[in-house]
Length: 78
Image (cartoon, rainbow, N blue to C red; front, top):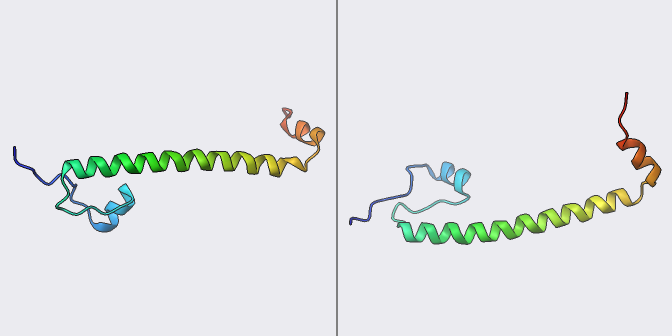
């Protein structure tokens, strides 16, 4: 089976925008699968960390607001 070029014909700028990286036209399927697997793992960790950071910072932002004020803001308005 011939190893054909699997990288889509994108400019460097388009590739970076779509995949976060530019791939060599000589990249083979195994290299791309490995790269994608590693990137996905890293990004999932970053997303988890960012969600935790956001939650902690939201709590910090709200900690100085009295409970009754927060409740009044959450009550439905007519």
